[in-house]
Amino acid sequence: DAKTTQPPSMDCAEGRAANLPCNHSTISGNEYVYWYRQIHSQGPQYIIHGLKNNETNEMASLIITEDRKSSTLILPHATLRDTAVYYCIVRAFNNAGNMLTFGGGTRLMVKP
Amino acid sequence: DAGITQSPRHKVTETGTPVTLRCHQTENHRYMYWYRQDPGHGLRLIHYSYGVKDTDKGEVSDGYSVSRSKTEDFLLTLESATSSQTSVYFCAISGGRQLGNTIYFGEGSWLTVV
Image (cartoon, rainbow over all chains, first blue to last red; front, side):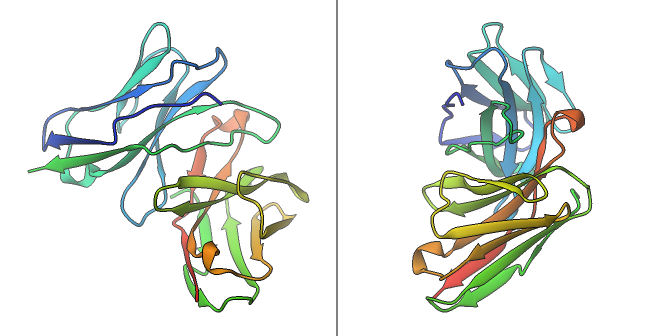
């Protein structure tokens, strides 16, 4: 699986958009980009995923560059409850389904 | 909620004793996984299953075994617990490509080996 690089931490003001970057320069053509988050002492929570088109759901938007070497997760109006560690993961499908390899993630702190 | 129940949620055990963690799902998903999470290491895959009685090793499988006799249950066993196995253990499930390939996680089992 391709590796990802994320900043270790970021701050965001409550009510503002949080833009979390991820670099995945070695991504292969059939690999998806997944985003998860983990709030303290809870299990990782799925947020969104995409292949090459931008995606949006009720939680967030995912912007993938045209060359697919990087992406940005956007939380449009961050709240204090969005404080968490956010993981950007590149997934390769194999016979065992979609195993995920987690890196260090970005610790997002939403401040009042 | 993803329909995943882990038990026990918290356990303290002594070095050398066997421990079994259970993951139960109500989604009838084909794939099930056991991860552990430790400070400085993030989430690491221990074992996974792609069907009843079909399992394989992950990144950190030494000292662990698994069994899946039914679709809904995936058991993780520490044959002889060691202090290095003190960790938070997460079970995960996935329905595969037909169901969007998304993995969903349980709430975790905290294990302390003393």
